[in-house]
Length: 196
Image 1 (tube, rainbow, N blue to C red):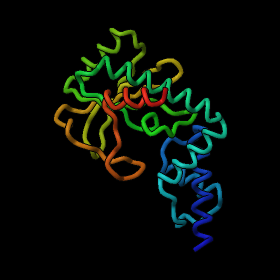
Image 2: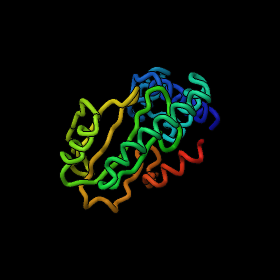
Image 3: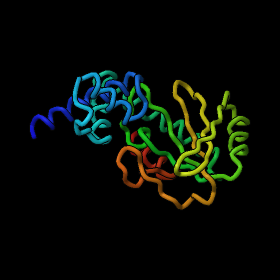
Image 4: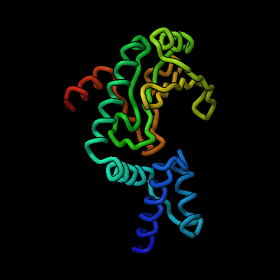
């Protein structure tokens, strides 16, 4: 039992390292690579995504220092609030590490918004000065939707545009498997006030 726990910890540490370094961007692939690198059996019990996320957070604080993590987090949340204010009619929510606070050097700003015409959201952003907005059609078991991606300051911003009919759906997190945590613009503004 102790050996299994030790193997899980080692996999979590290595997977976190791969994700912080940018070698892998998906938890599953990072864990599989860690198993290979450590020479463990492919049947080894994998750590949860939440455990890997904890190690990512620790690594970020070690590398950047708590003060720099706090500074970046505030900056990322401010950028999110500016964008969410601009697209407020499309019911935006902040999700992911910028909401949870578990950021690292590679973290981006992840938003969800709702519209049946993503071009309107893209035009709003372009008219406000956001440049080089890439769009990508995503099709998976959840359905079809659009990702908008662009750079703001030093950060990547990703906005997933879901159909308006999805507005009341709470999606599950790929990390925890539970209902995804998300913050409205009002909740984000409260977070920013508390952080100051």
